[in-house]
Length: 193
Image (cartoon, rainbow, N blue to C red; front, side):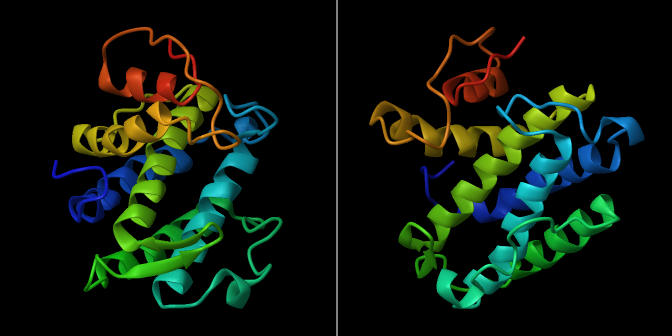
C-alpha cells in the first residue's frame, strides 16, 4: 500500500468489483426489497446506487463534467434486469479505469476536481462497504480482497479523523472485532456483528 490515494488503488478496483458482482448475482429473488444497513435503502436501491456510479465513471474519466452527464443516471437504472444492468455498468467502468494512463490527472466530480486516484479510492470504498451492506441484507458470505479493504481503510482513516464525512456516512461505532473489514465498516457507521 503506497498511501491513501496512490495509483495502487486502481489495481484493486477489479477485485473489489468482482466481489460485489458475486453478491449481486447471488441476490435471492425475494430479497430485492429487503432493507440494508443503509438507512432507508433496500437491496434494489443499493444496487441501483452502485450501478449508477459505475455508469458515471466512464464518462467522467473521458473528461466529461457532471453538467455534461446531467440527469442521465437519475432514477432507476436497473430496469427489468438488475443483474444484467450491474454487469454492463461495472464492465464498462472497469474498462475505463484500466485505460487511465495518467493517474495524477484530475477528473471533475460533483464535489469539484479530484485526482483520478482519489476518485478511484472513493469508488473503492463504495464497492467494499456497500458490498458488506449487500451481503448483510441478503445473507450472503462476503470476503473482499484484503488489499481492497486495506486501501479503503487507508483512504478513509484520515478523512474520518478530520471529521470530513458528515452527510456521507453515519458516525463511527465500536468495531465488533479487530478484523480489518469490521474496523472499516464500523469506522463508517455500520455495526458489524
